[in-house]
Image (cartoon, rainbow, N blue to C red; front, top):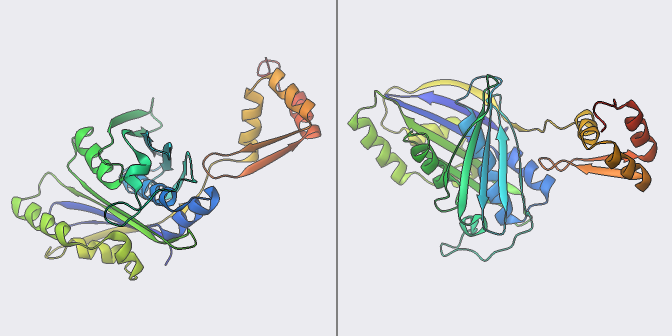
Length: 294
């Protein structure tokens, strides 16, 4: 099943559901994540995709968890076009299972703050934040939307990790009552949410995003599916951008790298490594303007 996101509305409710197994597998592989780190990264990337689905084209969003747990910072960038990237500060965390016998994502994230930054391209980015509720990612995003943006919503996320540390099933959903939602609608929605199976379990059984929405909206008479968006893990880094980073370091720093005879730059978001030989660094120094290389 290809990764995808489906949008729908029904009787005063907005629902998004996403299948993210392949992109989460890609992120885990690129960062060599152990299971608890892979689950945290996968949930955060999926959550970012769901929040970005409400943006306009060319806008973007960054979700960042800064906890005091062993994972460090967990970050994901996403756009409404279905592109996401992310990384975790310490991908090699190992923790015992929690009391429910599941990966202890909450313990790995720890206490701290979750922030969401929206990039509209029309001015300075806007950032909201709140305290991390339990570190399990889904509850934290639900709490953030209510506490920081005064938007009652429900976020569900799931990542099933295999024995080989890869993602076997991953995805999530976002539900938001609209202003015209009735008490009857809210009651039915709460009842459905209380009995819905785990997200990763539904996906592992073969359910796509549309089927997950149908499960969430049982009993709703009029469900309108608005469209499907393909999803992928993709980074905006490039050799050209890395060259610009090297130039921004200044003349002395570049000269020091030339003396070393080699430079390797690794992108935090995707793990891609860019190699520069002594000759390439020297050519970059020569091409740099006096205005840039101070």
